[in-house]
Length: 317
Image (cartoon, rainbow, N blue to C red; front, side, top):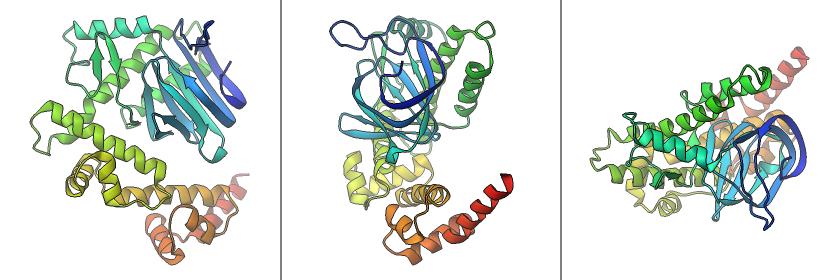
């Protein structure tokens, strides 16, 4: 059973996502996973075990410690054991999510093995902290890059189409953790060209930039300026702008624009709002500027893009 409000379609579920004890705490017993779709997704004052959340379609919004984090096809979230959160679907849109919840002993065993072997998958200099053998991940999302995407695809395929005799759940949960730790280790390669020698400085800067990136993703439809973003990252405006571009390969302003364009495309495909309304919804004040930017991104005006999508749907139907 999913502990969230809304109408859910369970595609696959196994193990135990949670266990509610007599005192109301959420306590896990075994590893568990759930692949499900939801309409009107909402869960308030939830508590999780160590878990990894992926977005298959739509956008999940997590409110944790007054921070709004988004999980979708482009980014995933690692939640530490005991994290309190509220989750909802962005704009009440339908979402499909894949969640893995881990038994604490399983995670400790995994960390202990990799700490005491020659494998460099886990080190004391990662972007996570190790309290004993319990990992504590920073409160920001991670990119679903070309290394992560095939892992998610293979796991979904295994869970949906293979029988219980054909898959090894223990191996799958191990693979998820290996992917997460390997991805965290690779993040710091972005700093190789920034002349930062001290590892702890790289880790701290990456965390600050990632927090600002999450802030942009949660507020890109609003008016955002460089001073506000640098404040969120606790960096000077010049330092923030320079480091953000070198780390993520795009300036903050272009990142905001790209997110607005992707949202505009979705609205043109799925909503009947006119171009002026969509322009306002994604944070632009001038429809002429919005139209020019949209055409530069897609090669089509908003109206032409919508007509093309409608025609393509009609042909496929």
